[in-house]
Image (cartoon, rainbow, N blue to C red; front, side):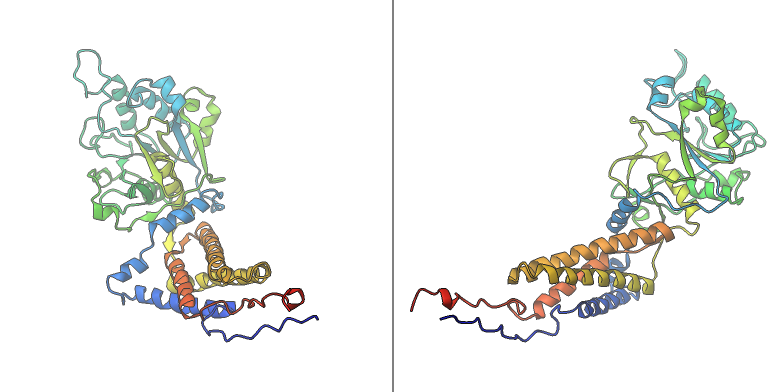
Length: 439
């Protein structure tokens, strides 16, 4: 005799169980808004600093996504930023077996750059001391013939400013006697590093940073004629509380900056055709070492691979030109709205996926373990893409630490208040009586 399987019993569900995305989103928005407001108004005491401070790891995560995207289109009228790279080929050809790049060759390079009539030149090289290339019998540390040629070149009158990264110049303690019309000034060389990763530039303690100085020259606000002011560079190392204060401007890193940045090997300017010098006309030029033996290599937020310091300065200048207001953190209500939008989309996607996956497995562990993990993965992916697009196109940084914490907290609360067992899983009806061998 054939028996039919009895219908599934209707079980009572907890009001806090994830039965619809709207309830999940409402729970998330309440928790997130309360915690974000408590942190912004300093209502949590010492914990408020942890809530409101944009963690560096989140900026690294977003920067590694945007690094592979081409930079946004520049505003019309911006000058071209050109990096004259002293690469491995230039070092091997013009300055082999030398700790510093040959100063006589550097003088010739500056002369070739000047023919192109740039708007400004930054020398990202340590020129405080002599090159130790003195003739035999002469005390090391004194200026060599190449040093003298470079010093003469730097003191010569010109129509554009040259920025050096230290106050001392070839054994001198300052930039005195630059010569009439030389337009020579010093800028700060410091890069702000938290746990040995460059994410932003420090606020100047004397002279401006290289990026700020070049941006000011581009805007017509600085011409390096006030040498007594511009040469006040603080060469001391940054103290720990100055490094980790987070007061500097974040740097936007991109692998490519179309129509705004180009790189020219130094060897092509020294021995190549004169046409390459035409690319320097009215450009902001940075000169620095990019070879593998350079001591000026740093890890950045965009990549764990070391990046030359001159390339970091180039990205900082390009950030300053592309985002005139600098990279800034998002305000309170836009943060609530955008985060709620991203989490809401993630929850809806998770529930749509769950409706299909539950047909494959209705076991309790599937709803308790797999579905929350899917929700968190989808929310993470959508929020990271949202934060990356926001930073890329507007220069606004959306901190994702608190949203991730609140999402995990909401999932934990759901598990605590949900009824034990899986109410949506069908109970085991037991063996089919039609195939039961017992009478």
